[in-house]
Length: 456
Image (cartoon, helix red, strand yellow):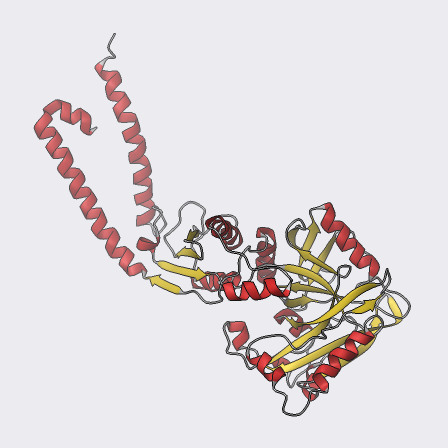
C-alpha cells in the first residue's frame, strides 16, 4: 500500500524544520554579536605560514652525532604536520590547520576571530607569535651532567686552555660566534669515574636558555642591579653578571657551597661568555647582548636523550616554592632505567655535588643540583618560568620531538584581513538567497504541485 499524502508531507517537513531551526539559531547568534557560523580563513581573516625543512642544519647535526644524512619522504612530512598540530593546538580549540606540502614544506593556517563555533576559541595575533616560537623548537629533551672539578678536572683544564690560551690573532672563536656555533670543545676523550664505573667521556659547551640566564643573574636587566630572587644554583641569591663581565671571551670557574642538605660540600660550574654577534633570527635573540655557555659532560652513562624508544609524559606542576614547573615521567622501562642509572652514578659523594642540566633544543633551561637518585620521574623548574611558558613546554614534550627541523623563519607569510571576509559574506549571502529563490520559483512554475513538493 502506498503511503498516504500526509505521511509524505511530514517526512519532507521534519528535516526542513530542523534545518531551519539550526540556521535561525545561528542567524540569531550573529545578530547578537556572537559566532553563529564557522568561517574559514578567507571569511574570518587570519594568517597562513609556510615553513620549509632546514636540511643543512639537520645534516650537520646528524653528522655531529655520527649518523648519516637521510632523505625525507611524504610520510615524514605528514608525520611532521601531525606533530605540529598536536603541539600548537592539542585540544583543537583554535581551528588550526596544519598540512604537508610536498616533501619539504608544511602549511599552518591560523584563522582569526569568527573562525570557530561552539566552545572554540579564536586565535589572535599573540597566538600567531606563539606559534612562530613553537615551530622553531624541535622539542628534543636531553639530560646531561655539568662538568665539575671533582670528576672532570682534565677535561675542564683542556677546555679552558683552548679558549683562554688562544694565540694572538686567532679569529676562530670570533668566527664561531658570528656563525652561531658553540665554542670549541676538547677533541679528546677522558676517563671519568664519578660515583660509578669508569667510562670514556668528552665535553661540550651548551648555551644557557632565557630561563636559566635569569635564574643566575645574567640577563641584560642585571647589568647594573642584582636579582632579588633565589639562585637557581641553590643557596643565597646569586649575581654572576659582574664576574662574567670581567671575564668576557674567557672561561670562568664558579665555586660555591652546595648548601641545603649538603653541608660542607661544594658545587662547581665552568662558564664561558661572549658578545652576541650573530644576526638575530628571533625576538629572544634580538634581546640578547651576551651569550653564556656551561661545559657539559657527554658519555653513554651520563646522558639521557628523549628520542625513539625513550619517551616521557609531561604535565604542569609546581616546585617546592609553588612556582610553575614541568613534571615528567619516563613511559618506557628503557628510559626509566637510563635515568635512574644516570642519577645513581652522579649522586653526591665525598665533598662533591653534581648538577643535572636539562637541555631543550641545545639550550639549558634548568641545571639543578642532583641531591638523590631519581626513579624515572622529576620536575623541570626555572627561576623565571611563567605558567604560559610551562604550558607551552608541556605541549612540546607531549607532542614529541619533531622528526625534521624547520627553518626559523617562514618562507611565506600571508595575512588576510577580516574586512575582506565581511565583504565576501555579504555578497555570498545575496548570491545564495537569489539563486535559491530562483530555483524555487522555476520548480513551482514548471512542475506545479510536484515542483512545490520537490522544493519542500
